[in-house]
Length: 302
Image (cartoon, rainbow, N blue to C red; front, side, top):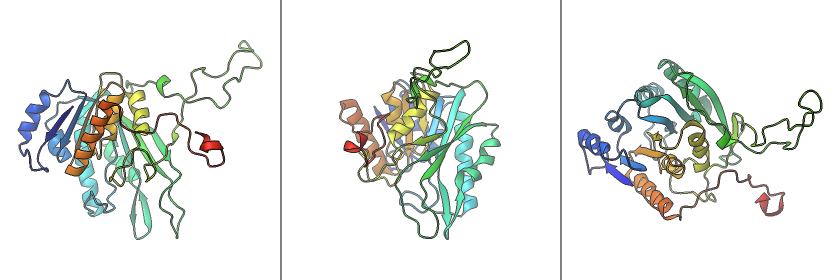
């Protein structure tokens, strides 16, 4: 595991130094960098990453972000997106997970604001994945929000896509054709079905095994589904808004190489500790495929 520091954390302020050390890290399973993402990304080689997956700040004034006016926010996002496109492999994917921008009780879906920025880079939207979760803030003057979106973009039509590793159990696994040339044969894929573009994973709240001090962290199992379907073993995965390292963990767990940068030193330290726990086999995560807790079932269905 490699931990680097560059401008923003006081220990290394020379972008060139990060670039030179980066060349020595290409064989490492995980690279964590405490740095502004533009400063870090501009020194990485073109086409390096098969998957760039992230959840940028929503400009809500959270503890890890500075709330700015909407035009400035979109300008910063445009710079990050442009740099990510340069770093993206020709057969690669960008997955940008966002929620809503809220001002005076009125919401604006952030992905609708970002859509023109991605299209301006000639990317193609493959899916607008809806991530549904059961818990969150309760609203008084509108319906409580229980979903966010992941926009999956590719450079072209020839992109890495592996469906089998992410198939989910079929609703009717033993259903068979009742007529025609396939009479009596299974009508569905015995490996399971396509999970569709609506995903249900618990968000990381206080009772989640992955909970850290970060207020809005990715569940690892969500990123695992993207890593398994959009990359092959040995590919590089980048999270330019790393937080506490969930995307890097998901990449390493499945024999990919994970890279992440983050401007908050404390989050980088937590990410480092989580990767060390992963290496030691002690990291607690919610397993892929575990059923959603149902209080109406014995032991919640677990």
